[in-house]
Image 1 (spheres, rainbow, N blue to C red):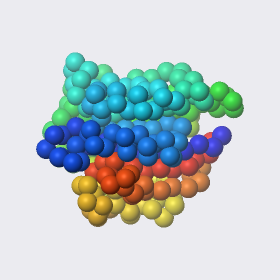
Image 2 (cartoon, one colour):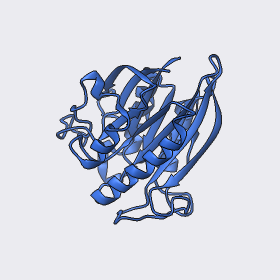
Image 3 (cartoon, rainbow, N blue to C red):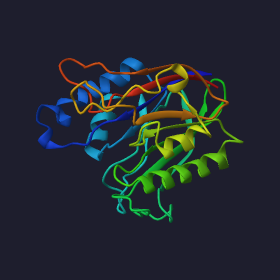
Length: 252
C-alpha cells in the first residue's frame, strides 16, 4: 500500500495578518492539498470556521478531531482523510498533560492546552490497517514539549505492535532539541531520510525560512519512506500559510 501523508500548520485566523489573513489563503490552502492528494493530512492551528472552509473545498475528505479547550473549541489538531479509500475504525484525542483524558488540561508550564489527535484506518482495497497521530507542541515551554513528546511516544508504543504508525505535527523545535532527538531515537524522521531533515518550514509569510524545520512527519520502521518534500511555493500571489506544508510518500 503506497500513499502520501501531509502535515500542514494552517496559521490561525488572525485579522491583523492583513492580506495574509485566512480569508485570503483558504482557497490556496485547499488547492495545495488537492494538488498533492495526501491520503491522510494532519493540520494544526485550525479554528472551526477555518476547518469548515476546508471541508467545503475538500469534498473527497472527511475530518476528525475537536478543539483543545475544555468546551471543545479553540484550535484543533484535525485529521483529514480520503473517505472513499479509507474506513475509520476508531479515533480519539488526548491532552498533553499529566491528566491526558481531562479536556482542556495542561501541565509542565505549557502556555496553552495541547493535544494529540489519533485515528486507526483500514485501506478498503488492501485491508491494511495503520494508526495516524497529529499534534502541536507548546511554543514556549521546552519542558512541556519534552514531556508531551514522551506521552505521545508512550501511546504510539502501545499501538505499534498492532499497527504501523505515522505521526505528523508542528513540534515547535528544531532537530537539535531534546524532544526531536528523543523521538528520532524511536521513530523514523521521514524528511531526514530523504536528506531534507534540516530544511526550514516556518517562514512568517516571507518565503525565507528560519533555521531548521519545526514541522515533521515521523513513522515507525515498518513504514517505508519513498520520497519527501517541503512545499515552499506560493499559490497565486499568496503563501497558503506562514509554515510550509510538508509531504511524504510512504509504503506499508
